[in-house]
Amino acid sequence: MNERKNKPIFVIQKHAARRLHYDLRLEMDGVLKSWAVPKEPPKTAGVKRLAVQVEDHPIEYANFEGIIPEGHYGAGKVEIWDKGNYILKERTENKIIFELEGERLKGTYCLIRFRGDKNWLFFKKKET
Image (cartoon, rainbow, N blue to C red; front, top):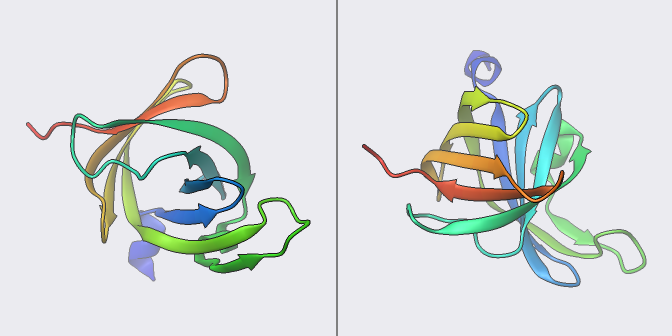
């Protein structure tokens, strides 16, 4: 459990709501900072994805899989697509750089804010 304290968690949940999307969640500031990614997260460098920042979620939500019932916000099937720990490399108001240690996603990723408050670019950095 000591390793958990040193390395925050991340989770990507595949969410079949009104439109299929992926919820990227990074443990920060005692919550899961969250972004909705309309297409499958990039596994290789050079692929860029839109990531729309959404409301923070409680840390406990990282393990959620199941069905959100019709009539509720986010109704649809939620399954864990990837999860693990990450290492925060840099964080400013408009940029977050982090190294993912997941099952599917490994390597250094970036979130760069653009076009207003909620829209970010999500991509994997080229390894040097």
